[in-house]
Length: 218
Ligand code: DX5
Ligand code: ZN
Image (tube, rainbow, N blue to C red):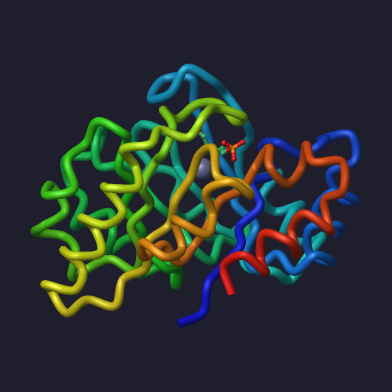
């Protein structure tokens, strides 16, 4: 099955955003990950649909929009219009996940559910057959460059079991502290989509690191 490297532009040099994105694409980036933070659901503010739309003008690579915001229903349409191909919402701050998933799909995007490190995989049981991907946070959301939480690996394995049990073809995405030292192990445990922020954009050689990470999962 195809695996996807998803550089997270949160760690890019915003003064040279176009160059950084194109370097990662040169290295084989499959999807560009865009982290949207509202200063409410997470203790940080990042950027909104206008920047996503700029990214969409820079590259044809699909865009993955990770919504770390309250009331995402008010913004799903705007991000879809800005060029999102994948949109994910958190389980912790949304009471009507089924409705949100349908809203994302109605916009023509792949729909994902995100789990914070303390959220149980079994809370996915009733929704797993409706989603295109599950995003496992392997750090507490809000900031790039944090250390991978080791128990996330076990969570990936539990999610994979749940997917198989439900005969679902949904993908597993991992986000936070992913790099050279753990990507192969994560891939072997069932991860399909790998979000890499600091490990790519702070590496000193964006295209080379992207292609090296890609080699480790293929
Ligand atoms: C954290 C974000 C991540 C972040 C990952 O809230 O969801 O996407 O950019 O960054 P690294 O790879 O640096 O941990
Ligand atoms: Zn993210």
